[in-house]
Length: 194
Image 1 (tube, rainbow, N blue to C red):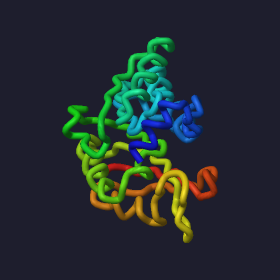
Image 2 (image 1 turned 60 degrees about the horizontal axis):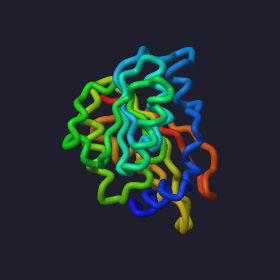
Image 3 (image 1 turned 90 degrees about the horizontal axis):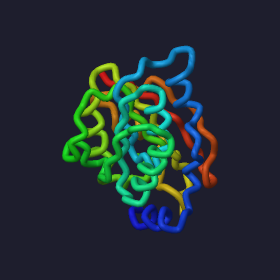
Image 4 (image 1 turned 180 degrees about the horizontal axis):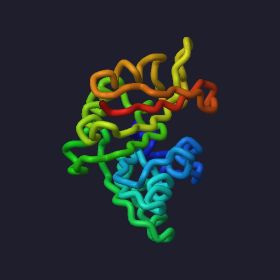
């Protein structure tokens, strides 16, 4: 998948990059039960739309993506917006090696986890667990695999996979259907760190 994403950013093919924060994130930041600003980690931040949005609302944000071109675009967008999130080129399955620190009250993943090969998913979960204190919340958006394998787009997650992979340190407190993408189902997961 890494070759795909590098090529996608090179050629400007980014259907996942709407340039608008999703309503699920806006609800957490601006809604009736909004969180007080704290530290936020944007995993697979792409061109920084959500990192910038959070930073503009008082959050101390770190965005990570493994595609240098995406991080370059994120830094330029942040400068134009007058926002100052930290952007790091790096592998989200190696969070502790990236020196991102800890204490993240909010972790956001808008379609990164579901693109990671199965062999890297447990490392991703371990890293996210290490950087999040008890009570932290993760908003995770994933394509969900059906009975038929997908030939295009991300691999997705199997039904029940998120609860199973995060079971050692997180409670799944919400799972809501998302908009279909590339012919498959999607879901928003809300997890709370124990």
